[in-house]
Structure formats: structure tokens, C-alpha cells
Image (cartoon, rainbow, N blue to C red; front, side, top):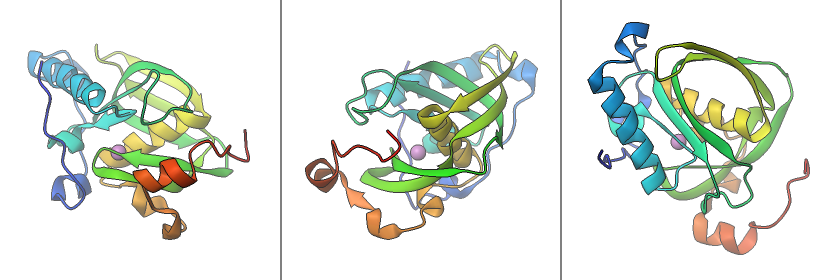
Length: 182
Ligand code: NI
């Protein structure tokens, strides 16, 4: 178990595409240790998710968890989930704007349009296939993490960079203002 160093915006690893894993490789001790370390790192820094690129490893692995997260006080809970080789298919044309942050873009928030429902096909940490439908905030986190594995960060998806906000100003001016969709 270890807390890994998180790459920040500007590190080339965030702009590279991660490599898929063979299902048989997922259960290898090295990959299992990486997954455990990614979970520890996500929790240490109060991330809602973490992609392997962010810990300098170009493998198609992401971890997701939201449980009373102080960085996302209004967010619904998401139980711990390990996502390997994710393929995300939008189920709606509709895009909804919502706030996102990223451990690789420290102390910032911005409004990002995302599909409100997606199908996720992937492997779990045992290498077993998963196929599920995610909506709303869960769908948003899946899209954010899958983007990382394709070398994309949330800033690339923003329509209006004028919403890019330092966390201190966000707490002061935006926190507690309900989304129109609520
Ligand atoms: Ni991120």
C-alpha cells in the first residue's frame, strides 16, 4: 500500500493514451498492487476517481469512489469501483453542464458538459466483464476518468473557460447554489 505521486497538468503522461490489459493480466500481483495503491491515492487526496495516467502508468485502469467526499459535498455516493479497459457509449444526445475538478488540476473547478446517461463496458479487478448503465453524476465521473485514459482532461471539454474557478472562490461564490437540473 502506498500513496502515489499524482501527475499535474502539463505532464505529458496526461496526454497519452493508456494501453488496454489482457483479462488474464488483471489478476497479476503487479496490477493488483497498482489498483490498491490507486485506491489509497484517490482516498488520500479526496478524489472522486483516479485514472492510471494520473499516477504515471499508461494502463487502462481507473478507480472511482464517492463517500461523503469533502471536495464534492453535494455529490451522491458511488461505491468503490475498479474499471479496466472501459468502453463508454453515450445513451443520450443530451449534455448537461456540471462542476468538475481533477487531482491533476489542483484547486480548480470548471463547468463541463457531459452525457447524462452512458453505457459502461469494462472489466472489474478480477478481470470479469461488467456491463452497466450509469446516469447523472455517476455517468459524469465515468466520462471524466475514461477521458483521462484517452489523454483528455476536463478542460478540453469545457465550452466556456470563464467558469474556470479557483476552489477558494468556488466555495465563496458557487457552493450551495443548486444546479438547475436539481
Ligand atoms: Ni481527473
